[in-house]
Length: 145
Image (cartoon, helix red, strand yellow):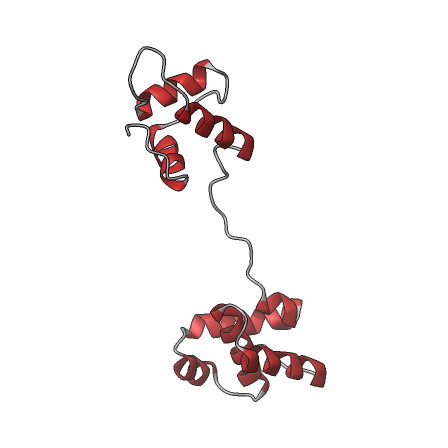
């Protein structure tokens, strides 16, 4: 694979130096700015990697992205793949309201009772134990208290 050369103009250099100097961005953005500045100085990938305590592949990836898509793209975080959310905000609110209500025929809600009630009331078509548990944990709700 051919190594991409990075040549930055004065505005880009000043912007990157500003990012590094201020230190008010995420650590990843600051590291990427440092990588680009060192690439502009024609440092070797392994030397940059050792200097900044990152992998050589990271340096290569940032250099390549900058050459292909520009400085802004090299600084920004690409969207990461992941599982989409199971419940919408409205469904979460309905689940919390359900968890804080009085359970029918019981003294307290269990997670399994909440799962069944959520499906019966049409909040969601299906839901698993862990989703309910994490929602209650996130909202500091304890159905058994």
